[in-house]
Every structure is written in structure tokens, then in C-alpha cells.
Image (cartoon, rainbow, N blue to C red):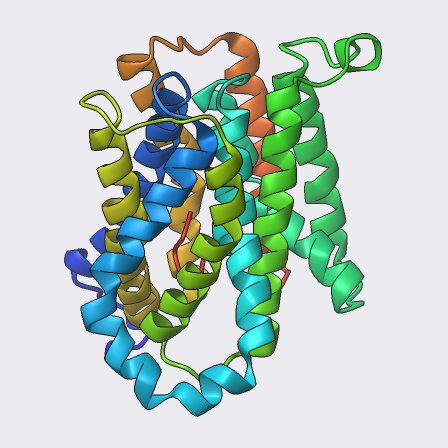
Length: 307
């Protein structure tokens, strides 16, 4: 294994996290496109059910071999599956009907900063000065972005419903990442992902059964297939390879390009033309995230890559 601090890294090592970030960015576009052709409860359930089915022949033997450890930590797996699979992505699918993919991309980019806040509350670790400064800068950027160029608009009109839901989803994912690192469950990464996916399916089943029928058809099947295979399975593999060869700190830098990818793809495929407030607000938000990361330990919220 190449040391993270090796002076000369093969280019292919840099491609691992870059491609993972690209896949997750495309998933933002897919989430937005799904809003008009399939119910949120349906795509959320189908996505993880299909991902679980694909994973079964590869991960289930390992889960069975490690069943004692899995059973001993089953409540923790349930919490992780609820936060990372059911709640985060479920809220994103609902939010997509009332916000843009561009906004979703920038709000998702706040997960590392939200992680700092969660660490302060859950682990009672005081954030560094740079983290607090970065938080203020990012909040200013988000206010500009969500207020569509006029932060004062938030006081009179309030935030968009979809933006609020997306923010709650990002907060849930930040908590997921902190707990994943804190608990350090003694199970292999693919086996851990598989058990979490199983709980995600279980938690989404009631909503799926109670929601109005939303059958699969030619318009939504490609979206379900993409969501189930690429961001759920391929991106985790690429991300874990990137962390393995580059180290978590260096690999996490590539997450900051996700909003750039999302804005560009949304402009081409969804016609979401970026305005000046998108550029300025987004730049401030990302600058705040990078400031917060300068002297704050990384509690990467995407260790399993289930964005």
C-alpha cells in the first residue's frame, strides 16, 4: 500500500476519489429527475432493495462468518442504517420536488462542516477557531444562496421547504459519519454496508407500503438502476480505494469538487443556469468548509460512501 505522504503518487490513485465524487454529483441530478417520475418512498425503497440484492452474494457470506460481531452491535447498525440510508436519502428524494439540484449540491457540501458541529455536541470537543470562522463564512454563503441573493429575504419569506429538508438530511448524514467513526464496529466495510442497507430497507418499507402506487416504468427504471448501482456500490469501492492509497484527509479534499460537478451537470441536463448568487454564495460556503477543515480532525461522513 502506498503511504499517504508518498511524494509521487500514481495518477490512478487520484482518480479513485475524483470518480467517486463525480458519481455522487450525478446522483444529485438523478434525485432531482426522479421527483417527477416516481414517488420518493418508491425510489428510496427500490434503490436499497436492489443494492442489497446485488450485494448479497458478495457480502452475505462475510456477514454470516462475522455474525457474532454483527449481532452484538445490531442496535448500532440499526441507527446507522436509519440515518445514512433511510433518513438522509429519503429526505433528499422528498426535497428534490421543491428545490434545485444546484442547491442540493451546495447543501450536501456542508456535511463536513456540520460534522464539526455534531462532534462538538455529541463528543463535546470544542471546535477550533478556524472551524468557527469557517462556520460563519459558510452560513453567510448559504444565506446568500438560499435567499437567492438577498439574505434578508429569509427573515420575511423563510427558507425553501426543500432546502430545509435537504439541510436536515445533511445533518443526519453528519451524525451518521460521527457515529460510524466513534463506534468503529469490528466488521468488514462491505459487511457493515450490507447490514446497514438491510436496516435501511426495513425502515423504508412502511412508507413504501403506505405511499400511493408508483410502478416502475421506462421513465424511472434507469434512475432507480443508477441510484442502486453507482452511488450505492461503485462509489463506495472507489472511495475506499482512494482513502486506502491517499489517506482520509487527502481523499476528502476531492469532496469539495462535488458542488462544481453538480452545478455543471445540472446546467446541461436540467437547464439550471447558475446565477451570480449561486457563484458567490456557493464560493463562500465552500470557502467556509475548507477553512473549517484546516485544523479540525476529519470525521468523514462518507466513510461507507452511501451518498
